[in-house]
Length: 136
Image (cartoon, rainbow, N blue to C red; front, side, top):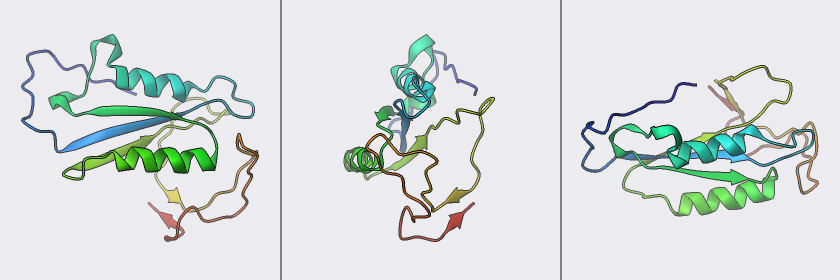
């Protein structure tokens, strides 16, 4: 992950055409401290003197690891979006067995949970949305 530091002299755009929403997640199963929680908050806070170029707005949300909360929070986030421009959602996740950052290149329209979510739901082979099985 590379953070962009924009010098104060960088000219701002009159009106950013897009905004960015970064989501992290709270604890779940064997992940007591989810690093995506911290990362989402830090990105949106502008910590360490960095910010997005050209005044692009950045918001963050930390979601409970449950399908019910994610659905509700994403509805809330989406309803607050400015429809005059684009909104880019960046969803951060954690792989407890992972050794670094990985970018998912294919979206699969399938919910199969290794463990139950924080509210006890553990879907197997359920579609996320009424859409194609995979995009990528």
